[in-house]
Image (cartoon, rainbow, N blue to C red; front, side, top):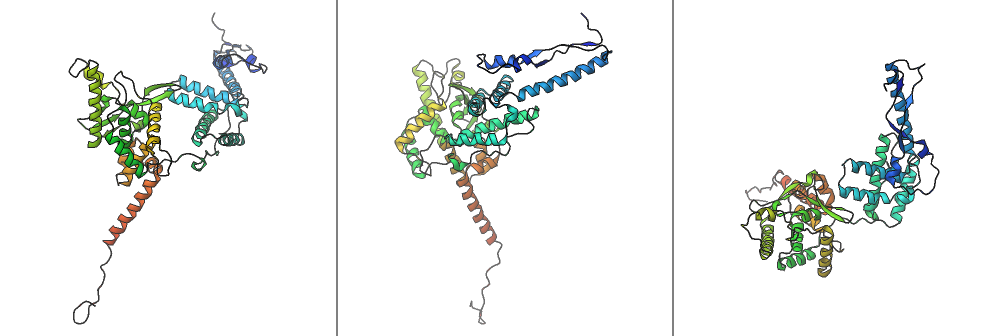
Amino acid sequence: MALKPWEGILKHKVPNPAFVDKPEGEDTRRPEQRRREVWRQRTRVFDPETVRTKTQAIQALAAWKAEEERDARAVDALMPVAEYVARYIDSREAAGELEASTVCDYRKSARRLDRAFSKLPMRNLDRKGVRAWKDGLVSDGLAPSTVTKALRLLRMVCEQAVMDGDLPDNPCRGVRAPSLGSGKRARNALSDASMDRLMETLAEAGSSAFTTAVQLAVRTGMRQGEICALRWRDVDLTGGRIHVTHAIGQDGGRFYVKAPKNEGSTRSIAIPPDLGGVLSARREAVEAALAAGGMRRGQRGYEAAFGALFVVGGIDGSFYTPTILSREWKALAVALGIVDTEGRRATFHDLRHTFATVAIAAGEDVAGVAGNLGHSQISTTLNMYTTSKERSKASAMGAVERALRGHAPADVVPLRRDGTQG
């Protein structure tokens, strides 16, 4: 039935008072079901004495919609902080804005909020409460990096809440993350003695998936997930290039192939002669294993099938996960006594730091090193590798000193009256 000129129906989701006023108590419904029931559609028929024309009806509808949206924001501000954060993650996941691995990390960080903020309304969150929560996580013995991730997530959610009108300002602003001195493991390279033992061991080892992964890490600086996701079709032995196009992500207990960490992480890396020999030996080992299973070069579809295999993986198409790689590296590091320059047992990721430190200390162009590492900014490379930066600074000062000597006036040697030097 057609509406009269003074009637209007607003098809707009608004707060459901029956839910908002629901008494406290145990609620067995799932979170997504509870969020759906927060909203319901409402209808309004305007007073014909005040709304006589279609234009007046449109204006009244706009005013009512603005009023309802203000009320909706008020309801959001009453939502507990932990639930508000969970809804933020859900909405960004539903919109396809986050990688599955990122969603997994966000949900882990969100669990750090439950104890302190499971009942506190979003609008009551303040800096004092955020700072106390952060300090409590540190006191509980959590790693600074873990606390920093949780604080970063809360700050991001609060920033969105400010934009949506649920908070007047961001209560996380001014709350500092834990410092490096509170326990975060500094980035460090392998000690010289450990490097000697490692390279000697690799020279005598075969062309297994694990030893190839170690060689790639120390000779290219590739990230662990990038090494695990490297396929043979991304290795151009003839042209001497490695094309980094994918990485391994983790979603709970599931590992999957995804895009690299950021835009700068998609890159091409030159293959030096020694690494070319390592990769050629690995390829021969894989081809031999395929031949034993009945697949030989020259067969139809062989090259495409071979190209789809992972360099660090099996002939069945499987790949090494970062977890497996870390476990095997730990066993090797313990057996060989491989430590960093501060005497701590080296991690697999320290091989990446070793590549960068050795390259910069050897006088390589920092921009080139940053490009190989996949850093979008050179400053990131320099800020990470302090030792190399200090060496480079000392080298630069020496170069400047030598250059200035070339502009200095020659020493004046006084002559005797007989023409000989004094």
